[in-house]
Amino acid sequence: MIERQGSLAEGFPCELDWQGCSGLLLDAVRLIKLSHSLDQWNQPWLFEPLYTAQRMPGLEDLSPRVQKIQSLQQPVLQQFLANVEEEWGYLLFCDGSWPSMIAHLRWLTVVRMPHEQNVFLRLADPSVMHALFTLAVEAGDPTLFGPCHQILIADAAQGVWHLHQRPGPAPTAQYDAHYLLSTQEASALDVVSFRNVVLRLNQHLHHYFPAYQTHLSKAQRWAHVHALATTAYDSGFSSELEITLYANIHGYLGENALQHHPDLQQHLTTVSPLTSAQRIEKVAEIARCRALHLREPA
Image (cartoon, rainbow, N blue to C red; front, side, top):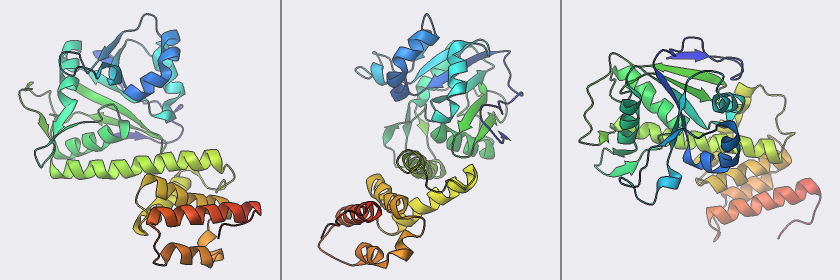
């Protein structure tokens, strides 16, 4: 795997192979939010949906879609690159045919967990697929790559491009059974889920507490926010809302909020009839009132 440090917008890798067919895989939810803009960027639309009415009736509007990319100057690609830190999707470079790439991606939309349950794979989520492609390369297994010999994924948290190279030639297509996730792959998806919580938390802090930890570099800030979320989780506040409220305390009162306000720490740790969600909500509200010099709740 090749990484390019620095600005994502300026660090676009030069090792990409544009000789075969190339595609931009975009997340379904992002497509819904961007539908008006996409209509302006790309006339006519050439998106290939991965969920079809025949295979997944009723889910077509939620389908990840692949846009055929023929040059760096293509408007939809330029917009993707201009907004790359939003993690809309990722790029695929194929040494097979376009139909073979679409067939492979459709095969991966549903996978089998180690405990034999079939689940939808978040195939258009860059962080999910980065984790899986990393493990595939480490194992020397080209199955996940299929006809795609290069996968380019932007990592907004680290500010780098991940260029995954298929380990070996394309495997023979065998789509009769679902792709079986290993225990290691399934565990990696749990790590990715927490990473995405941290990513959204970082965005939340940027938006609602723009003065918080502004002296940190991007990498330092990521480490700080990750540690904040981990501390919240280890303290028993495990839902995304609870983690966000825990961070709000620090957003209102500073990095050392609980050291400087030991009564809040006591509220968080003292056993009471309140649930963990109720405790953290109350303490976050006290922190807000204290920061704004308002009357605190009893």
